[in-house]
Amino acid sequence: MGIDYSQLRDPNAEYTMRELSAETMGLTRERGGDRDLEITDVQTTMVDGNFPWTLVRVYTDAGIVGTGEAYWGAGAPELIERMAPFLRGENPLDIDRLTEHLVQKMSGEGSIGGVTVTAISGIEIALHDLAGKVLDVPAYQLLGGKYRDEIRVYCDCHTEEEADPIACADEAERVVDELGYDALKFDLDVPSGHEKDRANRHLREPEIEHKASIVEAVTDRVGSRADVAFDCHWTFSGGSAKRLARRLEEYDIWWLEDPVPPENHDVQREISHQTSTPIAAGENVYRTHGQRRLIEEQAVDIIAPDMPKVGGMRETQKIADLADLYYMPVAMHNVASPVATMGGVHVAASISNSLALEYHSYELGWWEDLVEEDVIEDGYIGVPEEPGLGVTLDMDAVAEHMIDGEELFDEA
Image (cartoon, rainbow, N blue to C red; front, side, top):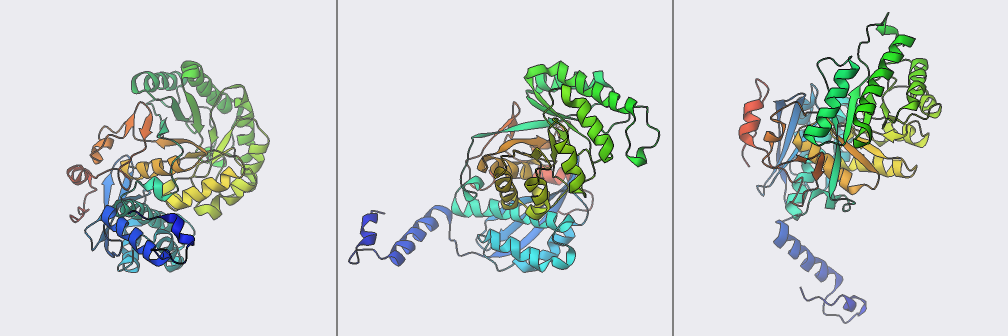
């Protein structure tokens, strides 16, 4: 533009601040389109993946469309349809204001947690994709820039015989050697054959030993080639979780995830404080307020929010910033399609304390087909430099895998 910024202090300068702002805005329009635009519609389509993925698209009068994804679960499409009138006519670049607007408007639907937050998350992710396209910047730039160029992915692994330690070790070795991952996770809430009454959440000693045998087999097999975490899915009592965590202290595990139900943070804190086994939790609480006590009371060693469930990209970044005050790493839970997965990539790029991002669909052969771009390579995802999220829906693939009764999105 040829602007001499040193003249801003000169009252006789050629450019006033208002004129400078107008010229700067003109540059933005030239690069990314007119910023004076409005939302015209919001649509959803559910895809039948290994989870039912709710894809979200936000349309504008400029013909620019943003794509997002809400965490799977019944009710999200209906809630998004109810929220659409609150968004029509609004400027999609006001992401924070619109997100808070939806939280307030949907307070009667329980917008501090549950599927309402999930629905808002899907819209918020789509707004980041849309704003990035309008401003011609990748989504991570909207979050303040990036710390890294690629994101480590941990692969959630399964076997047909999940209770068999050798089968788990075999699968761990295969995923490391053949698929190229250096970070894995296995389930520990699997039948051992020693249960008397699973409803009481109590672990008998033979059950604990069976779980330790899975951990031993997997960690011994992959050795230093991969980090391995183990998931309990909120299954055990407080006392049993303490005994299990202590039993596993001799093994080099990345973390033990969700050993107790998520409601009582006091119990979660006591378990974490009484073992050297790293403890992770956080996917089943909502927004920064829901994560706050886990972080401030250091009730976990690793915080694990689910981005398209917890409130969206900015909300996850706020959680990460709070965790960073306590020098706590973030390992985002993720069971999403490539759309929200890439949203998680941009968040992980923008925070200093990102540890890894989960991938839960390695057994689903068409997962990457849902978008036109390649996503995961040798256990890592490169941070896109394209505007927005950097992925483009393959509408043929979406149509092929839609849940029965769903309708395909309108064209832009």
